[in-house]
Image 1 (cartoon, one colour):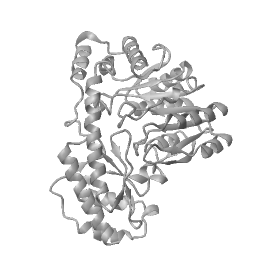
Image 2 (tube, rainbow, N blue to C red):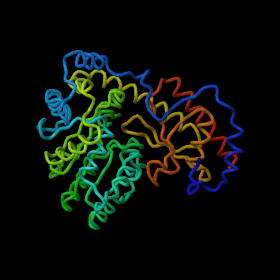
Image 3 (cartoon, rainbow, N blue to C red):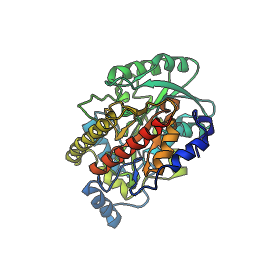
Image 4 (cartoon, one colour):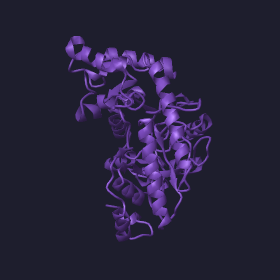
Length: 391
């Protein structure tokens, strides 16, 4: 059911009539997430988990994860991402990155805290903050620039000046795929240090970058190591979401607080699956390089298809597995388009889910088979152009 507060200029009856004109689809495509049959996990994953489950691992690990696994993960993070850390005190394994995000927010946020969140950004972050009874200030992110997105740092400073104490963001940005330039993060870090605020950096896609895009870790900026929780994981780039594994890097006191949250919620990351992480970022470099190339080719296909239509304006993502096109017709809402596409057999995320600035966009996951992605885009274009011609 469409959100009545965001129904646009058309009545729901008009929308139902439009949907009724679309025939029941012969094919269907779920473009909300990756097709892990096309892009399966690395071969070592099932081997390592099986080895642990058949005697190589223990069932009840410490809440923050198996010590040996944490040592291997810390060494690989340091070697490949340049983050020096103590595996015993500055790293915790979580049941997926989303669990890590909830534990991180729970460690920093209560009903007396205001959180700054870019707009648009990951669709569940604000819901978690509201669940914790905290307040949210949204700061617009401009991703119309084809080079890199920009944050309104003046608005960030105003929120911090008014008492906000936590800044949460995804980089690369989910949903736009934008990657913040190092200089933008330098400016953000300066404000967070000045106002003694903390940051949660969701870097789930930080290895899935295109066009040799430069990447900087907020934790590495001056003064930020002691005030940043960095979330990482293998669920997207390595297609390991079914293994429920996430990694968080943070100062010891925050890791302790996250462990307290984890022990009363999920207790630990799946014990046998944890051992998959001993190979993560170490033996999967060749796979990642191949996959990034494949995803970049699919990104180019999606951008080319969408730009061939007068129905969309398209920002070229520098990372992630998403494109986030804007619907040109001002009479069409992203909810209407999402409903029409679902009737036509294509499931996408409407942009409003990611914040007010996402309205009028749709998020498409490109991690599909090439022909399937092409056919789905043909359907998307036909449906949206058809709706636009009747507006």
